[in-house]
Amino acid sequence: MHPVPPDPTAGRLRPADARDPAEHVVPGDVHLARRLAIGGLAGVLVSTVMIGWMHVAMPGRELDPMSRTISEYALLDSGWVFDVGVLVLAAASAMVLVAMILRELVPARSVASVATAVWCIGLIGLIVFPKQGFGPDTTLAGRIHWTWTLIAFFSLPIGLLLACRRRTRGPHGRWPRVALALAWVSAGWFGVLALQTLLSALTPRAWNLVGFVERALAVTEMVAVVVLACWVLASCRPARLPAD
Image 1: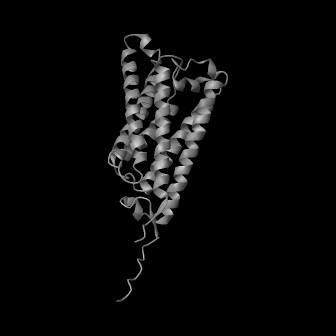
Image 2 (image 1 turned 45 degrees about the horizontal axis):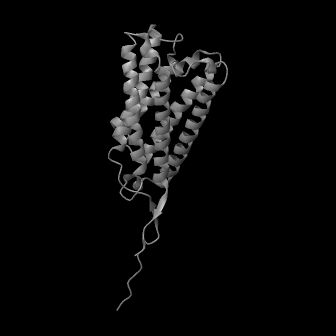
Image 3 (image 1 turned 135 degrees about the vertical axis):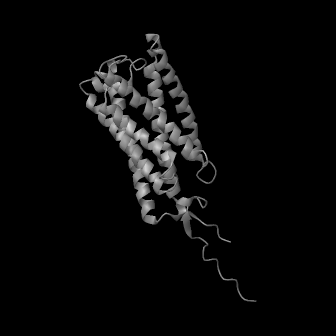
């Protein structure tokens, strides 16, 4: 009897998810995707520190976080810190989106990619069109600012739902599952925020907890960006084919 030749694939490295089309991405793109994901994680961390600092440092800590919107920090003397923090978050989110496209976790030409890109653009828009005063802002610029805020907060959950709903199985399915859960939580917070916006036209009391709801929504969506970056990193890890 002739000896059976050894399996040439035994012990060979392959992408972590054998069923993921990302396994066909060339190594250079894998390395670039990993660097972009790590940069996105670092950006979210920097943004969190900068915006969080506005809550505890003077004069920002004098604002009531329950009833004051986050954007009102931009009206303070140190408001540039808030602006930079939001722009860093937009850049970090864009880096994660590009990394997901490189790993083919989401198609470049898809509603999911567009929705996630709109989240990034919306963050920039609410900086370009800042609030004009504290409390409910009924000026044209203030309404434009609030519109950009709603667009940003609404777009990311849509992107998460579309990108992750069919990717919950497989070796890396836990990350899309977590992202889906965060998408539904964000959608819930957004619904409350939209309802407050509508009711504020009837009674100012509807605005009392807008700061709390907006911050809860913002934190949820920042965590979602972190989860997406972790998904990219997980897809970049090589795994070994089992030996026969």
